[in-house]
Image 1 (cartoon, one colour):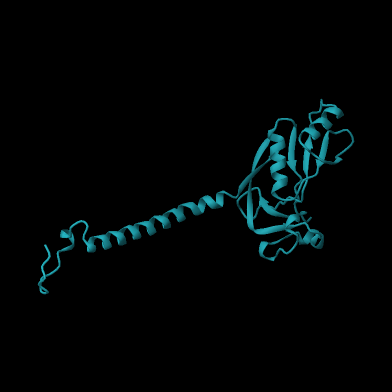
Image 2 (cartoon, rainbow, N blue to C red):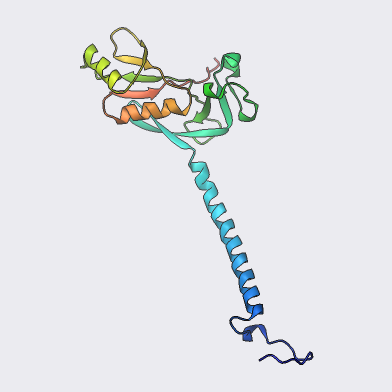
Length: 194
């Protein structure tokens, strides 16, 4: 109960009646702090998932292999940086044509794992029992543009594709279609020094 007596103490917090202005303010503060805490917790939980979201995969023959992207690096395959030693660079310094760049991947999470990138192209292996006509029909069915056969009569072809993720996605889609014996991206890897 409220009186007009200025010397009367306000009701104790545990005795504040629902709907009173003091209770509404304290409830809003409590809800706001709980909301802030919940947002912070969700952010902390989601951060590791964001790192895992960068994981991709590719097929090496019939083996599915994991890949991890290296967000701080980019492989630049533009004509200005065509020198092998200058392909991988920090992503902040990459000024080449974005259409000629690729994310840098590793087969393991460790930074000591060798970098790999996608300059474009998919390597396809046809069923050895397929004829040239059957191979051409599959190329047409999937809208592929052959660049060249790798070896004479091997049934292994390099197909054209955009660099970067489109190359990886095309290779995975082609293999998963079941029409090919193998499909993998045309990987770029740095040369090992002897």
